[in-house]
Structures are given as structure tokens and as C-alpha cells.
Image 1 (spheres, rainbow, N blue to C red):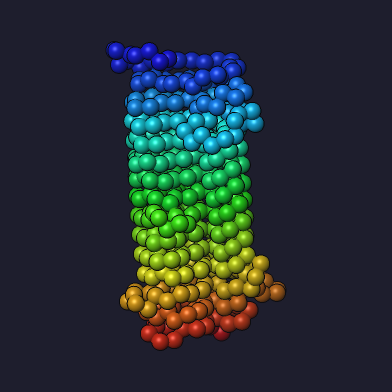
Image 2: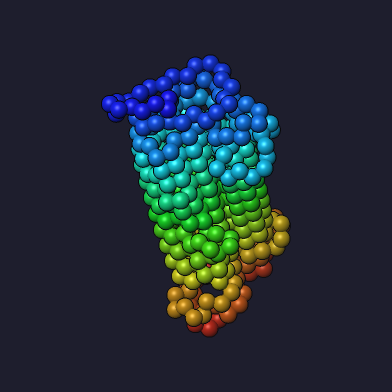
Length: 377
């Protein structure tokens, strides 16, 4: 496998049967590794990556089950080893129809490189991230992929650009389901985050070190996560969230926080979350249009939409237009449809139906705000 291929013709390597792997499989350019009828398990205390391609092009990995045997590896921190599949500075690659389980570190790590397709790949029970994309990797598409039961983030999208996730699922991971702390031109489409221990979807770096931008999340669902459904934080900007649902999350359904701006939510639903439906905190130039906000405050009495913090220095505030925020429960938990806490100005609330909440429809807006044509009673 590691010999050169001077003719640059494609070489197909077929593995069939069960294998104990005691060294890394290193792929060269123009290679197809066909494992559709193979099961590979890392031997005890090998502490290596299972499959790696570095500084090569035109490779394909097809099928198979990779078992990292993490219970019998050295648990000490070795950042670059003990992954299932590693692509480092690889151009033109396809990984498809693979199951990766029980790795000590990431299931799949893509660092640098471009023009990479990952489809129908499932990562189960990794000891770190499920899928990790970093270090200027770009022009990557992940489709029909699953990260389940991983110790940290299901899909961790770091310093990247032109990345698309489509029809992906992040379920029961130890941190966020799908997270981007430093990506631009990122699209997440038709994807599900469910039962994760922190946020369902997170855009932004909790430390504030990095700033993602030009992010679109569309037709996605965030259910039953311990934290927030969709969390946009720490200066993220040019983020569009459209036709998404946040339901039964432990904290707020949708949130922006700490100097986020140029964020739009369109035709989204926040339903029966533990805290607020939408929480807009210390942000500006935020649009919430055509959204439905129902029965939130399941864990603590909270508002459908709340605006907190002070963005009065910004001439473009929060625009809430043609939304419905109501509580249909016999015992209502959603306090106000829209509530403003703080000294926010330059906001617009218009054409909204805010009837049927526990305490009232609209509270706290005064000063330089435009309030018009809302149904409050």
C-alpha cells in the first residue's frame, strides 16, 4: 500500500475478512481502499491512527467497520494519534459507507486539504469528537453522516471554509451536537441534533477567541438537548437560521449572545423549551420574522422572546415582525410573548400575535422603539 505509483493510475486495494491492526494503514495518491467486507480492530496498546492519508490526492475509502478498541489503548493525551481516519492536507478524497466505533480520539479528522466528500459514515462512541474539521480545510461536504455517543462534540467544525453538512445527525454526544467555533461560508441543511449534553447547534467560540461568519442553518431540528437548541455567541455575524425547530431543550430554544450582529431567524419554531423561546442578549441587528413561539418556560417561568442587555449605541436593534408567541397549555408557563429587560432602544415589534401568555403580551419596550399593529388581547 505504501509503495509509489509512478504511472498515476488508480490502484484498488480490497480487504475481506477480520483483521487485527497493529500499525497504521497509510494511503498513497490514486488509491481506493475497498473494505466493504472487512472488519478492522486496533490491537491492544497500539495507540495509533487506524487509517491515514497525508499530503496525497485522489483517494477513496469505501465501506468497512473500524474498531478503535479504546478500552485497551493508553488513555493519555496524544493529540495526533488514536483516530479512526485521518486526512492531512489531502486533495480530492471520498470516504463513504464506513462505520467507525470506539476510537480513543476523533472518529474522522480532516486537517487542511480540500475537495473532500464524506457520506453515509457513522461514528459511534468515540473518545473525543465524532467528526473534526480544522486548520483551513475547505470545500468539504458531509452528507447522511451520524455522530452518536461521542465523548465531546458530534460534528466539530473549526477553522474551515466552504463546508456543507446535509442530512446529518448528532445524537447523545457528551457536548454539543453540531458546533462551529471558527468557520465561514458554512451551510448546515436538513440536520438533527438530539439528546446532546450541551447545545444542539452552536455557532461561536465560548472563549470569544474566534468568530464564525457567513453561516446558514436551514430546515434543521434541535430536540431534547440539555442546553440550548441553537446557540449563536461571541461576535458571530452574518448568520441565517431559517425553517428550524427547537423543541424540548433544557435551556432556551434560540439564543444570540455577546455582540452578535446581522443575525436573522425566519419561519422558525421554539416549542416547549425549558427556558425562553428566543433569548437575544447584548446583540444588535437581529431579525426574527414569521416565527412561532409556544409553551416555553417548562423548567422555569420564562418569556417567549426576551431582549436583554444594552445595545443602545447601535442604530439597528432587534426587529420582531409577524411572529406568534402564545401559550396553549392549561397551566401556562410562558410569561410574556415579548419582554424587554434592560435599556434596549431602536427595536421594532410589529404585526405580531402575542395573545394567550401567562402574564401578558408585550412588556418593557419604551424609548426609541417602534411598536405597531400587534394583537395583545
